[in-house]
Length: 574
Image (cartoon, rainbow, N blue to C red; front, side, top):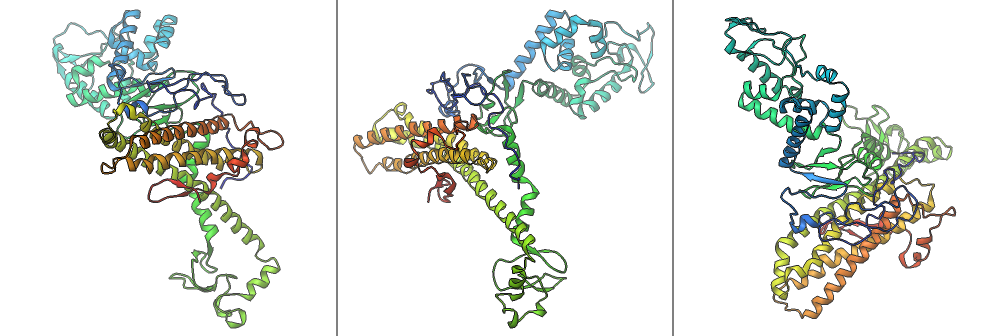
């Protein structure tokens, strides 16, 4: 487990472009911006125009804004494969026109300089000869072919007529068959074929796309074209592939943008910086430590230390989950001992306390003989319990979010049309239900990561911890009310037999819309506070925000008492 001395990574390490991420009004085109001041504290408090809070709204409504299917916003754009190809071709055409070189040479230049047009121009105009030599774009042959009837292939050393000899810009002669074998082998070796050079060991002449298309097999041509297309994303520092399984979209990110959470066309949201799932307001460092901890072997060792004792003979760890103190080790050891004092069972009996007690252990414990071992075991147990507390709630909210996504899809595909028919209401007027479910999905994501934040919040900062637990509890309480209303109370209006008066449905509309707004406000406060590093807590360990409503809100982290509900996958309060 992490020691108390471990310093938590501040949730506002990355300067935010939109400090009020969760404030402001939703726009119809999926994104929204906010002009409110973030309220001091962490970096980027006055920045504006970050990506919107309801990240799935456009995907949910299946709205396509333009022919490229881009989801554009100030900080990023999502590119499909055709868009990537178009951008690649445009870059090649620009460089070819400006530098007056062939498109094949322009492609080689751009790939060498990671598809940066400005870098190509700078280097070319600063030292054209140096760039040509480095990249392998020779302006004249180094081994001119003489006018003879036959030429010798530099690989197989067979004689061929000039019509069956091919050379790169350098002029070194190789036969078609050897060229094909060389190119095919290089392509099969992987993306390194994009930097292919002349087969002559002393030559640095580049082998371009034209020669690959002329000499490679159809399968290798397709592979090469795929490598070239992917290089536009993988070699470009501003572009990354969407990490969702099966997704072939890429995200082009604007330099200088502070909010790294992006949403792909496949509806998967992730952090562009670390490519983990979207985790705002928690910073990438905290997420990395949390994920590593969840998969680390150290937690297994902590569990073993906290819940087992070593056999006194073979030292194999043994867990006792029930029964008396008489323990028999597994074969081949089969040593019999007392669970409490770890002494041989042959020395135990009625005089030492029988099967369920040990006088020797109690006496030795009073003398301090077991203090160090018991202290280590107790510390490991407490540490494990603390980690389990946060992990279970983190995982439960993830499960709740997945179920909410499934419920949202069912609502869009089935229930909205059903409600429209039953209550004679256009589906456009039922958007408040979709908005509620989108809010639930996003709030579950935020709430999940607040438990990772809370785990690394230092215990000695009691003021911050109390303020954090208060905000987290308020947010979770509001979310539970919203989730209950959207999941349970809506069901009564989906039954055709119960022809409910329109007045009751209108009251439900008002209640659900109100809960959606209130829950959004709760999460605005939570997100803003975490991104600012909980700076609203003063030196006395109190919070001006929490003080005014602690009596009503019950300031000690209701979220800490949440437990998983197996039927619904939600978090329920005791």
